Length: 520
Ligand code: FAD
Ligand code: PHE
Image (tube, rainbow, N blue to C red; front, side, top):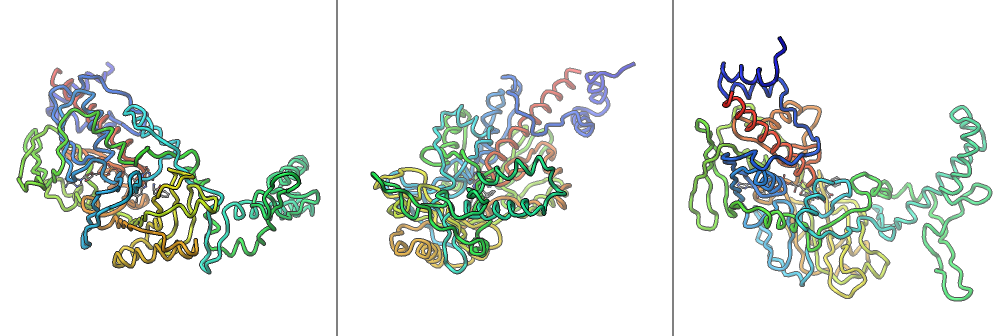
């Protein structure tokens, strides 16, 4: 006799009850739920099921939105007084509070803002872009790279991106052509390929008739073309040795990294607009200033104790299931009755540091033909990122004078804020001499000190943490963990969206299978 899926579920249910049936079926791989495209759930999938969603960042909001559409009775608890979590737009009136630092209050001019966390969305982050479309969040192009921007070496010498890219390509093409013509690659290439490669290199590197590189307009004009007989002339090429000596040369093609390629997007008015869009679309209660303090499972339900940080009042919420998006750095300190391996896994996940320093400034960089894009400066401030909005106007703009992650970010964040600001200003002064003094209204974010995050993004070591990663990707009883840290893109909002969709799918499967068992 063949055992059908329904037979098996019924049998398991009769032997051990719904919990046992569900556990066994999970172990048998009945609910695989990987990152397959998320299919909308039936509108009554969650009828009568209460879910507490902890955290209203992109993961919590995605989950709340999808669960509500599937008929679940949801309540969202968010510790901050705003939605979005790391998706945070700092503008006039915003307060930046960090552990151990004085509160900073933003006084930027109208329309000037600073995306303290995420600032760009690649074209291939389709799940996030899909929600922007559904929620009516207007997008505009984020100009991620500019050939007019710079690579600054440790000696302060700058290379313009267009020269760095095109002179390197010219020199390398000439060398390769030489090697081909000398027969050095005859064993590696067929005669036919060799014949095709030479003309290709000529175009690729802008070589002359003799396959030598004598410079190219691609790298910039020495004199610009003009009226009547004024012809454009190319700048002399930067010698290969000089290109290679610049410690930032590897950033010349940073925009070839798949996540950095054009076209990049940003929401009009700041990244937080996505969270606001979700907020408008979710009808269920989203409690702000609701800091989760305790998570306890009692029988068939979970009780959450939370504190209203505005009134200091303690409250409780009972739910059938919990979907927890709280960053693991924060969750590790919350009183919860998770299993010991889960507690250990949560406490063991490292998070990266990341800092941003923003100023309000007149658009002096646009006088150097820089419209958007990034200059790389190295050191503890790492880069200067130019704004993509208000281009070619006389309006004030936000200039990001530091965005650094990883080890240098740890060192930088240990410095007093005044010193961080001075270093960011000094780096702009070095890159754009005479303009350090143009920078006003500094705002600093050190993500390792930001309450309710205490870190920029999880930095799991995929080789050593596989077991913990898998463990947290499964529910602990009635509590489901989700968020960008449970995806392959911990430093991207797309990771938060896909993780949340997967978790919603798992929960809906469980509810469906549990009903089947009960109906047995
Ligand atoms: P979070 O946004 O951290 O949400 C968790 C929520 O839980 C928060 O709202 C928090 O307040 C809440 N919470 C915490 N503790 C409690 C508690 N006790 N009780 C109740 N609620 C609680 N992504 C991109 O797509 N593009 C980028 O350009 C980009 N750049 C980035 C730059 C920086 C500096 C940083 C830090 C991140 C960047 N990211 C970027 C990554 C992106 O921000 C994250 O992947 C994504 O926002 C994570 O969403 P989440 O919902 O998983 O977590
Ligand atoms: N997603 C973040 C950003 O775009 C962090 C990141 C930077 C991730 C560079 C990958 C590469 O700034």
